[in-house]
Length: 65
Length: 397
Image (tube, rainbow over all chains, first blue to last red; front, side, top):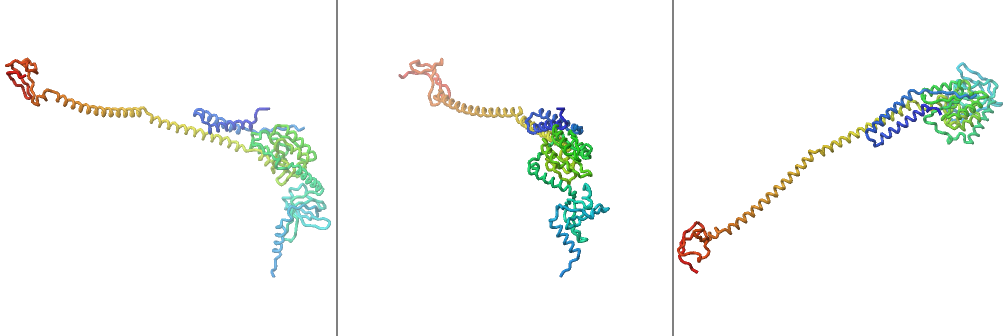
């Protein structure tokens, strides 16, 4: 298959962001670890927004000869 | 006796006829005569058979939706309701849909097909599948020339530009349309789409026959992924609508039902970001609380405090030691006094005080036996208050 499309990328980023948030919310992490996770979450959120902002509908026509 | 006015009567008649609900949703098989279309766009005519006739009206809105207007002498199937025109006291049939009676056969065939497919369970709600929340690839089966496609693409661009669209082109009207739609559907099923939209705009022509075609319906029924139909205008219902997982009134509505908006996607991200921020703030606040707890505990255990307490212990010990010492001293003094008393009792002084005397020779020798003295010898007698010089005369034994 081709490279993952925008929806797949969005889903992957969102799933990771979700996991980060849940870890932050429930995890008994040391503070330094929590801060690093938070930073990761911020990056993921930014990547998501960027992906959404840059998305352009791709249209391909099948050859139904 | 009470006299009605004609207006009262006609009003009551209208309410009676239209209010019963008996003459709604009727199909009439009839011949059209006296057909007239007015500049307003409304059409007035008579529907009749061999023995009877009824006045009929086709309002402009309904007339515009017909493929073609009937001509006098034409046999039609007219759908509508019975109304009462108060001004003239006339019963009339208000037509909202009309097809040539020749197609009445088609209509019967369509109803027969609908019943058959329904009996097979093809239209069952149990068969309806939920739409994917975030479709990756959307297959669109429609005519590439139609406005319907542009409507769909515009909506997808605006709402959900993340998607990929696979357009599977087909004819949507004419005799070749059913086979073309079947082929286009089959073609798109082979692609890894997760949703199919089958669409056709309303357009001027209302010929939706291809969307009632049995093979088209059956091909749609075996779709591996959910199907949304957006065929014609809102008022048209075709068999493909019945078999689809979701039926949208128009192609645009189909595109909207198929997709979330990009705003929703942004919101999901923002919501998670907000939760992350709240979580880390909580974490920091928690840490701050823990630190102040530790500071309190640290102050409680400060070395000075320990020193203070040690000093207190020392003071206490000293106090106890002093008390013990003082008590010992007192005891010692008492004992000393006792000893002194005994000492005094034992000393010769006490004996002398009782009247005894100690006799000593000049050299200090104590005389305890008279035989040890010579007559005429000088002796010293020690008495309580002093010394007495005496001379020994004779001894008495």
